[in-house]
Image (cartoon, rainbow, N blue to C red; front, top):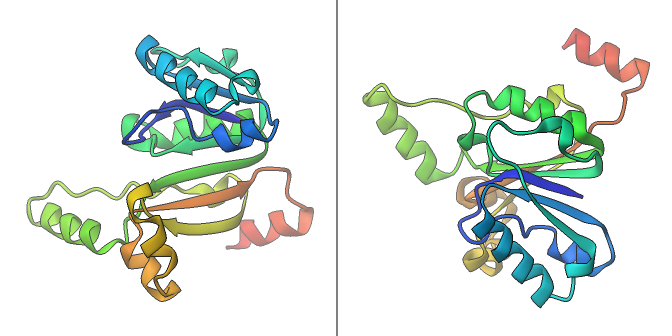
Amino acid sequence: MLEGPLDGAAGVPGVHGVVLAQRGVKVATFVRTEEQAAAARGVYDASGAGGHAQIGLAKDPIPWSALPQSDMVLAYQSLPQVGDWRAYLGHLASLTRKVLVVAVANADRWMTRATRVLGRLQQTGEDDTPEVWALGRVRDHAYFEGPWWHKSLRETPTRWSRRLGHFHAFVVDVRPRTPQARRRLQQA
């Protein structure tokens, strides 16, 4: 698993792969500062997964050619941190052998929609919903909340998840499409 090089986590960036590392999966995490790297190492070591985690630095400009290819790549709330998020996703997809996971703020959340309406009134609103469907086949799409709300959102009926979930994630299979799937995509 490759995580980073940008992370918009409210807490310690670069630690979304801890559970996988605990299960023996090799995790490569790239963060922006030495302080973030030290904090991430501390979390991995405290969880007993430090032996399966490589923590590195990726400063500006992002050294795309130095980042490892991986079966799974995670982009967690990183799109707001870059100017050209489409190019950023393209770079991440090029590092992905199987699955790209993109977690972003939920634009359909009631609070986000209210903020967007206010932004339009002030002429500052912008829609940055990622176009992940062009990168591959979206295998799954889920709404979720921050750690402090996990239990309550799990108990919320599915029809409300779209309006209450602070985030949503896309699981994109980037492996080559079949010829039939490519034709359907071109016709759409």
